[in-house]
Image (cartoon, rainbow, N blue to C red; front, side):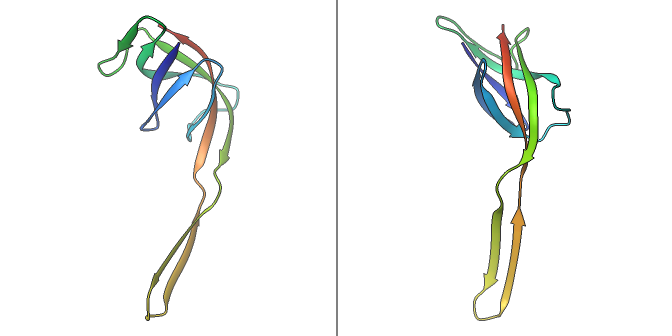
Length: 102
């Protein structure tokens, strides 16, 4: 059984006991949260929501928060001695999918 969930403006295909990284959420480590379910499928039946599936629940536990690896942004203008260097580390939340219920 799998589900497609929406979190942080992105969609993820998840199964039970899977660990995923999503955009940073305002939740503490150890909290259990419910996610919006867009599609639920098992071996013989698929339910597609409009836009979410009523009664379907994907429960997840917050494992930790962190930052991704640094991405270096370097911009320059040739022959003008204009150079800017900037780094960025995107924050994330790591979730463990506990159950998928429809």
